[in-house]
Length: 64
Length: 310
Image (cartoon, rainbow over all chains, first blue to last red; front, side, top):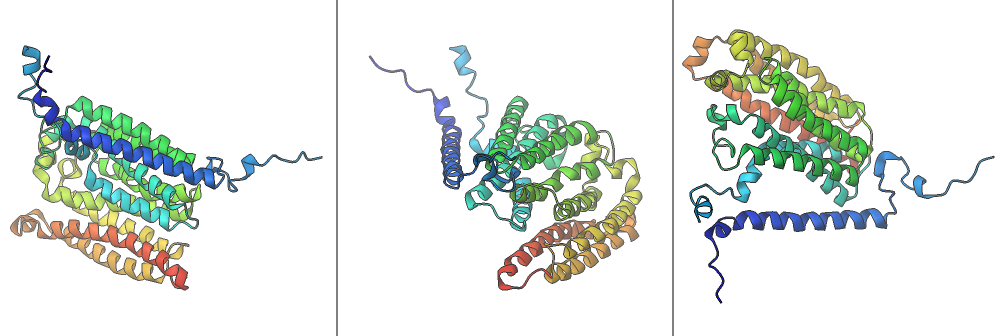
């Protein structure tokens, strides 16, 4: 049993598919790098919303 | 079999055609101004965050370019300058341009938010909305002031870069915005003076078409005069300094001289030398913007050595 020969449309689309594939791999790598940076710094993922990024994760002492 | 064979003679868009949808030349200007905005800010981001911020600001600009190509496909076919764009040339369908624009808008705004902060992401979302809806859909074809208001979209990137780093808007960010905002009208009107047939044929109400070329020359001079105080004021903020002031004084003097020369000429003179003054002012306006932002970079680069700034 033989496979049908590949339609030439797939050959024409190869550059596009390769490009999209590489972009997706680069995107995954960037998200991973961002995650490593943010997690190792103990960021709250708020970054500059809060002047001191540690405020949100440090439990506040109840004030009298 | 007939349905499969129908693919055979249709042009197949390559990856590069989709990249062209994002207007890479405009993106390179966005990358440069956003990078300057981010680097001159008083606090710095981690390099990975800074890279992500610039990437997603540029991607957002690209997304709005794609939305613009979807909406303007009908006039891009008419204008010689834009006929080779992917949609008018038939490589990419208008629907695909819309899909790419919408998808990249969402991705860029969310990713800028996650990598920096909500205000920067909000400004990026507003910029995309402003360029695609306010400028492309509404003002471009209805008012000769289209360039003035549309220029705001191009003016946001350095402000977004600044906000990505600092989390807030300041006088420096506003002045960088104003520099590009006030620079855009004389820059584009100089172009419109020597690309006249294009806009006319497409029915875009450029100032040259609606108010005539004499009035356009006056507008170029007036807007250039209004631009000067904003360009010079930046020198006296925290991001300015003597280098910037010196560069800015020279550039503004030359730009004013060019605007003055454009104003003094009439059409007969311009036709006679094939718009040489208009063309040279247009080219100089690009250098003008590039060197202003370059001077800001020089100031920040000199700071570690005790130079730069006042």
